[in-house]
Image (cartoon, rainbow over all chains, first blue to last red; front, top):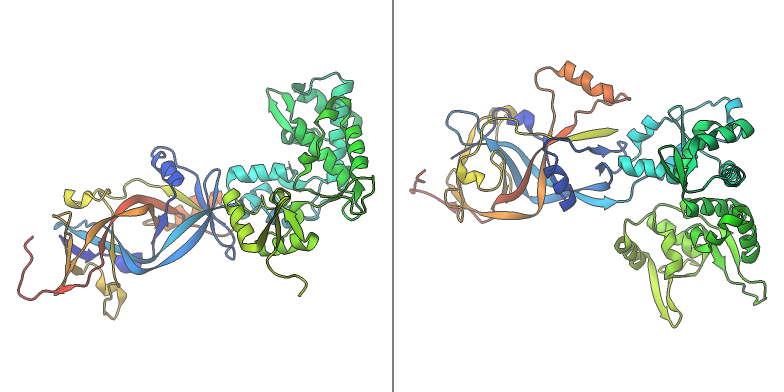
Length: 363
Length: 141
């Protein structure tokens, strides 16, 4: 069989790439003979590129080969044979990655949505579409990220809601559920939205988006996600204690009061994991431990910097304490353990495993 | 910037003879060589369509590649992970109209061609041994 360069091989050089496919991507491609799967490579020219499916993000890495791989296809001349289309010296590897949503908070600084927003004139905009093109995350992870970061979509623009305003709205919602005698498992969206619009001038579009963050809207009925609402209300109180700690007992009383009689029982400190630090009282007084607001979203993204920050905050961490602060930079528990192995030193004591810094920060 | 990737079906109708199609794809094959094919020529386009050698895969246990006076003996290897072969969607005949249709989905100025996965490959031909010099012997094909 003749083996030759294709008739336009010089122009075609560089037009092929080899991509290593993880099993789940193979399945996706094999099953998509009829419908096109949504696959795309995303990022700025200066970013490390990622490949996104509809619900997952993979980091793209180029691996250099010492051998040459020739891509060959059947020749279209009469004698048959095969044509060399391209010669490659690298393959692209895919590594599952966490969605790169971190950039959002920087991009949206100064674009927050607050009470009485309609009266203010907004100078700059950052649209949903712009973000879709720039943020390195899959469609599903992106919309989930907007929800988790409490970002409203108003007139096609992204507007993170000011936390204090969000807490106010949630409190109002809880109050109206009771005063209007609605069940929190199936509250009519329309009724809630118009009540808030009429009595507090909160736009319907804002209310309906908030309802969808904190529960499931199905056939115009809202089923509240009790834990999500309670957590956000707790955060609303805790946010004021970034520098001055609050007594745990005092905090819990406040929180329960805000949650109201019907949801008091759902208040649990564990809901705030990844957002607060608990300090047991060092003086041994009967007052009990204190809490401080410490959101993992405010920590550096780079693992080395994050561990540095964590160990500057505390010299040693218990496994279950440090975990919540690593979940947004590690894709799964295996990745997380790898990070711990790399950046922390484990000490086993009778009380369990403690992690301390690998480098001495005092130097 | 978003570079769309599509999965495309066959781009032409030519297919391999059955002996090569045994590797899993009837219109694309990956051949791994130690070293690379260097062509000495003044203009890179002068190598287009030129004969490199002869490939023989009639015996699946002993594929051979004859280049000049060198005979390479290879083997068929199953890839540890399947490879997707991406091909750049270059506008072929009508670059203008193709550009417009792509632009509609793109809000900014970057004009992105997009890539297609033209094949999923699970096996490759590897020629990793040293070539044997051939003098008188002629390959029967």
